[in-house]
Length: 232
Image (cartoon, rainbow, N blue to C red; front, side, top):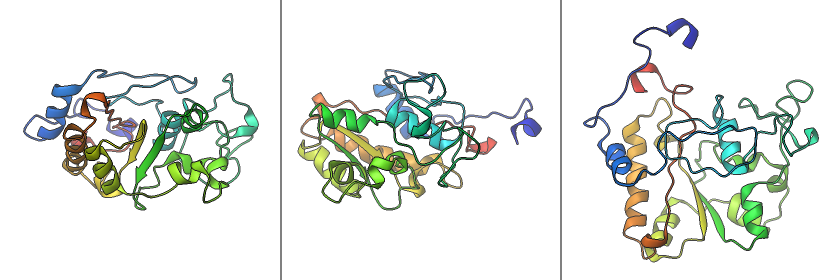
């Protein structure tokens, strides 16, 4: 626990020789390093840093990334739409009245894109570590097999499909990539595992036909909430 292990040596860091891929990517392209925001309000995020959207577990950060909100009181959503999302609860119902109610039903960013005629796709394999936050929303759970929410947001085209589309210049206007557990950098996996995935993605984009028209954002949902001290 942080409260028990909060000492002068509680935080450590990697050097260039430990994570050369991360250093190379950050030094070549980072434009919003150390950017952070509050997850209680719907905003657009351009996060290329180790900062969290909300100081909480994985699910609140991923829900914020895909919707701009965790449905805290005072926001534009209503209490009957689920949340507030402050932990990783995935059991239907509420942990307490008006708290951590699952599933959710407020409007997500992909739905706004769909309404605006913007093409989009979530690229992921079946082993996505449960990190596609869209699957926590009723509208995606109840969508039919031919519904865009299923085809583009709750399906498994695979990461090889992303590499191929990137290299061919046929990516949709907006893409999300949800990596497999083994390449997530979450314990027991290491930053070098995530580095392999990041390198594949960057190479596919850089060598792709639409590279000059592509913005790539690599986002973390926070570090100290999931990594042991020696890996932060």
